[in-house]
Image 1 (cartoon, rainbow, N blue to C red):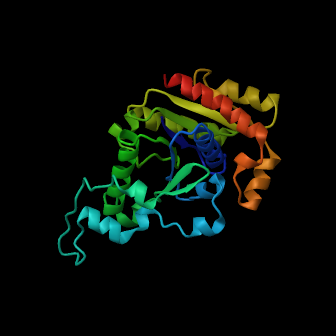
Image 2: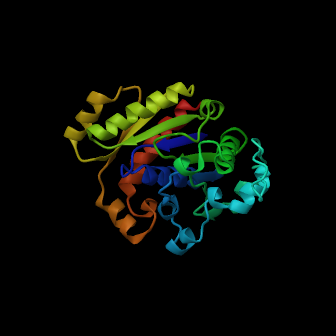
Image 3: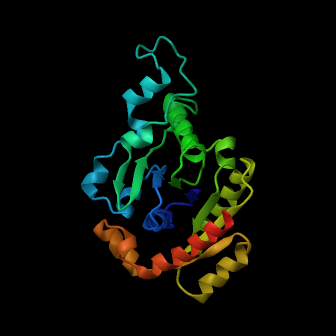
Length: 258
């Protein structure tokens, strides 16, 4: 199972990704959670300590590794570099494990400063493609909304695209943009999880705007999830209701993968 989770900032996609990853780990399955969001905080949501998270260097910032694998000339005289660098050993070398979930922080690339084709970008795209196509783990990617790290071949091999939204026009608009981007990449279906839902009015708002076949379910607003965030701890250990709601969503994802 390979799942890309996306959505605009603040909607709770990291909380959803973390709880989903821990549910798969609870079943004894090998799980790799990849943090591809520039505001990387998936580690805290998985249960890593602040000290552990602060010690992580994203793959995109590992200059020596990037230069070695892409064959960058350190003198800058030769401008060519490899477009197909080796990445298969990176997850085992650099992922950290907690609560049965391996965390790999990929980071991102400042496209405006580095250009859209640079060694760091090549490494990230190659690594994501490896995780999706070659890895035997359950892979859950906490993405940013842009999906620029996904190429056509990689996106086509994703089992699920899940957009986390909250009741609100901006969030729904993000879902529509992601659906367009994903469709352009060859993805046949983009699913939606509605988070921070406060009651029947919010549910009706979502149902009026999201096609029934795309809506996976609702995760209701929870002060316990906020408390977990304040403490820098995993929401999986704080809110049984949220965990159970995401467990039901997971069942639908699993059924659609058969």
